[in-house]
Image 1 (cartoon, rainbow, N blue to C red):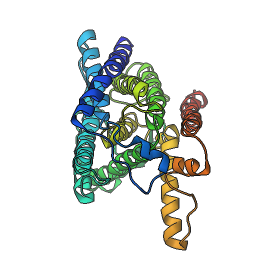
Image 2 (image 1 turned 180 degrees about the vertical axis):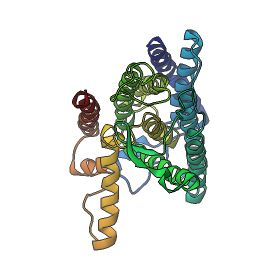
Image 3 (image 1 turned 180 degrees about the horizontal axis):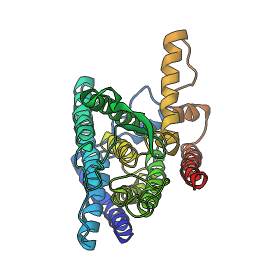
Length: 359
């Protein structure tokens, strides 16, 4: 547990005190956010606010994770390193996208095809490697079985080893792309995505710790968890949670810095990576329910307009609809945080209820 606490504390402190230095650097170089003209007019005052703050979140999380292991002398694990690789790789793709937007002063960064290739390379690499690195109990960081609270009987490897791996890679890619885009769409108001991420990663600290305390290696039984490195995954979640917490001080309204695609793609990647490696792939839909809700609002808006020519919302994603209705930005963020907290409580409730019912 010391490793978890140290990781969170180091990441929080580094993010809290380094972010203003990064803001100063970005301002000196003129790296400010470009605001789309077709968005809410109230956002035009944010033009020029420094972006790419996700780089601080990534650096803080990596430092928190690394120092925690160095201090406690606990070696890193394959699961933890793979999830951090996913975070860093997607963050790098987002960084390139942000940098091109700033350099060219336009709302479009990387070409859609180029961005997709970058995300795909990182996601596929993670998925393939996650099925490697067996431990002494023959557990790998990921499983070809679809999981909810734990692995279900639905095994993607039913069609054979090669096809099973391909199906798992496709499933993992769908999860990674979905969560990355979900966080990216949510990152439209000051502090909204960051505050929501703090709550979701806090839930994964609890899940990883609970799985570790009830591991099949320590407490064999029908309700034990067959997860390769649950404690280290809690360390990863704690480091990212701490990094987001420190960043939120500067990202809350009125934001002094935005995380940009650098942060949103990275955080979505970590969330998907934790869901895959903790065997809670479907549960993440409840834990990250706000991200799912906002993503669905975009799907409904686009689908309705293409099919009927009518819009369901005044503007998508959902938070911008409420802006145009007349809600203040801070009001929207706080109320959406409440909704996010309820989703996290629902997810944790389902997780614990499954344990209680089965014992």
